[in-house]
Length: 599
Image (cartoon, rainbow, N blue to C red; front, side, top):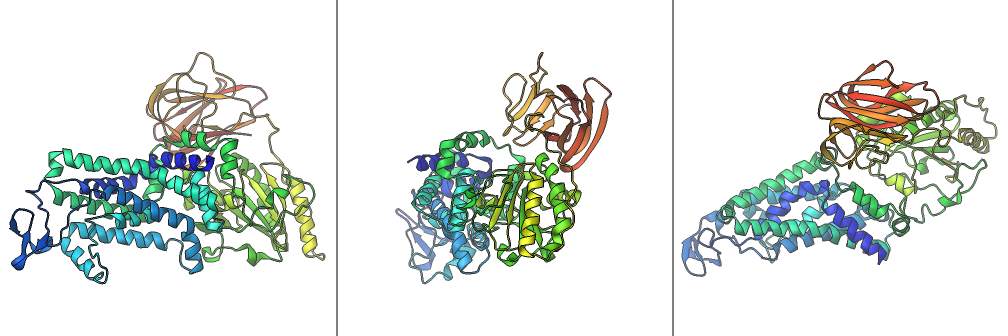
């Protein structure tokens, strides 16, 4: 019962989230407005076509134009059928689509592209009735030949469900992982159905609203033909938008006003138990918990789970993917990282050094880039970050966190050491423990080849801060703010802020006009400032856009930093003494501020 409630609420939250926006015009027009009762004098219901093209209606005979001879009556159940079709295909594609396509050796996105083609065809048919009649000829063997999107709407819903791309929150992530691994039990089925029903609620409301508006607004009632054209345009636009990843763009542009609710739903022990967040326990990964985090001796934690769901590979010949089975007989180190993560930035020099020292001796390092921010999904940004860190080993772009979830991972960074037999022998979460990890790498290399001649240990300084020795990572986006020290609510949208009379330790406050987004804050006036109270020896800030940042430490001399380009980490203060300090940061308009990180 708990799983069903989580699924329903997760679906409901997703159904009102920004990533639903691309399908709403189609739902409104084809699912709602087209089911409205129009004035009979404008669009008579055609019961049959008589000799000479005379259409017999309930009361009169009118001359029907050739393109209108097969227009049927519209079902009042249409909104329900469109949403039912969407829920049906979304559920089937999510649960078993990946398995079926894999068994048939077909590309994983073929269903999506076929569905987009169907949407375009239906859209053109709505705009050009003669084209709909051409399509009908291909279906003369089907008893119900009308494919012009005029009656039930279930078929339209099926096409929409196949291209439906809701935000992959924790509930959907659990469903996707179960489907991709083939571990589909009754719990997964119930969770998926509950999630789909939860999503369907807001969409059905929107469809019914479309019908109500069309029936009550005079302009809609008299323009049924115009509604058909608008619906066709909306369908074609949706297909085009999906082809260029419009939902991802919207996620970057539109504040995710549901992020906090989603977190409240799943970020608790009860929900984690129900969903097993951090990765569904499957036959493939069930033994990972036999490893102790940061152990100094080798352990045996089962065969390494596969690397799956990778959108793109960097630093491989021709961008080809890597299968762990191909690396049997060699040692593998999987490093989960994100290029703007300060913890990863301090850890990566060790991983790079291990690759350089042992890469020719049997060690294969694979960086699995698992994004924390939406901008970290961009391959160009990741490539630039990898080059800045000197990463030459293969990098897998795990944009949907599929591999992350398959490894039941929860940390940036995280290291999984796999021996020559394909067994996970060591896991290390977070920073530090580098000496132990390198010692185990050397031990496994000797096990694989007793005659190997190893170089000396790498000499990279461990700069991991002591626990509690620095202020925690500070996010300026509204979805992750945890230490805002100002007055009032830290909420998405534009607002005017002022520094408080007294600011708490290890907090940030704002002054001036700001626009707060889900993942960053940007100035809306020339005098916008951030005041940071912190304790650390180093302060960095993830910034993007174009402009200048003026930094003043403890009322000292101001320093100007030029910002230009995609998000990256800028050093604001280094070599700071122990104790609490205050950093004032003035940002020009056009600069986006994501987070403060500390060292």
